[in-house]
Length: 323
Image 1 (cartoon, rainbow, N blue to C red):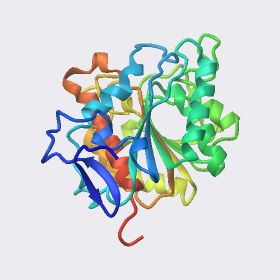
Image 2 (cartoon, rainbow, N blue to C red):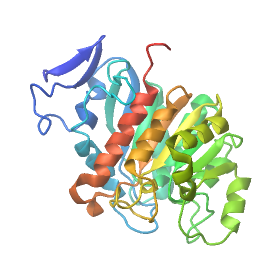
Image 3 (cartoon, helix red, strand yellow):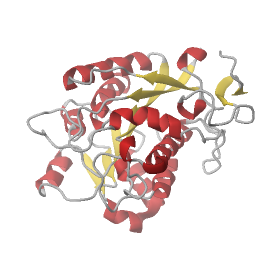
């Protein structure tokens, strides 16, 4: 382990001690957690996937992992809303970035899957930072290889179950169609949350249902609230293994301007974080947070939202005292 002063609890190596090293200094890992080579056992690995060759509008999400890490410096060890210390009850590390081909979609997808599979041999669970949403497909391949078909809970402004873009079957708008076709997902337990905006036709929704997804659209969130959304999610996924995929554009552009395909009328950051706390107790086996494009992100608004989103995911993964 490095000589940087760190918080160590119950044998788990946590963040750099902010009472000794100011948060604006020190290592640029997520939440200033240890690198994977600084510990022996790993419960959760955070991995960056700096890839955005699958985008259909604004580019720039390849710079998302570094931006989210930088925006995570202020995160502290104890989460009072969830009453958990996510870095004390499990060993969380930053496993760095996967290096993938920026010019070949097919080769990049193969590399992401191989990298995720290798990491899952070392870590119990992965939380990935994108990158664009194309990466969800190879990540699901790796997770399904370990757990079998998973229930996908997908927070996004868009369905991402379209067939092709310009004849390409692998883009950031197609990963969940491919995952359904490949048998990677449990089609009896999947749903989208926060979808909104115009579609190409009503056929999009019909095909989405055929692929195994229910929808909690953004227009219902005011009436449901976070508790109502969590109830819908729990009713749908039950005790199935759950993979959580979050496109940051599920948030309204007021809360996440730094993204590639913004849509008005989205969730607030408070609503998203409150909903994620409802994942505690579910059989959560992996997650990704994608589509942060820092070139459009004034004052780290989107990066901070994404960092707190990952913090709530880690808190949901953390073992509870009564578990």
